Length: 97
Image (cartoon, rainbow, N blue to C red; front, side, top):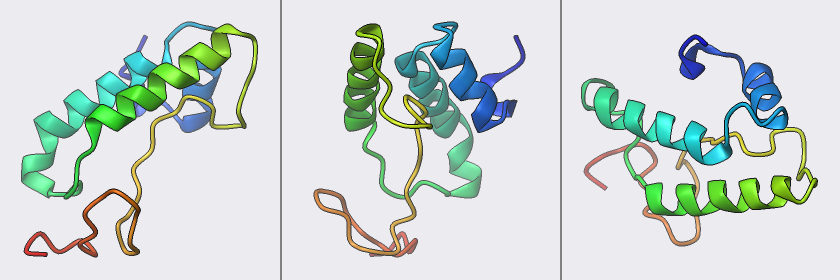
């Protein structure tokens, strides 16, 4: 299998739906990629990897029961912090904030 980061979201959803990769595995892959690459590009200012893994485990648990919570079920995402987000530092993309 090629690097999952190079797959489209549709392909990632397909892998999850066929149980070829778990949401946790996909999330761990992207966390490792952020930790490896983000120093140069500074795209992720506020990191909440613990919650991401909790949510991935929850998505996997729901899927194990044969349920799906929408079209992007189990696919990790990042959220641009242009607006305030409950429980997270909001910087509008400015590291100094």
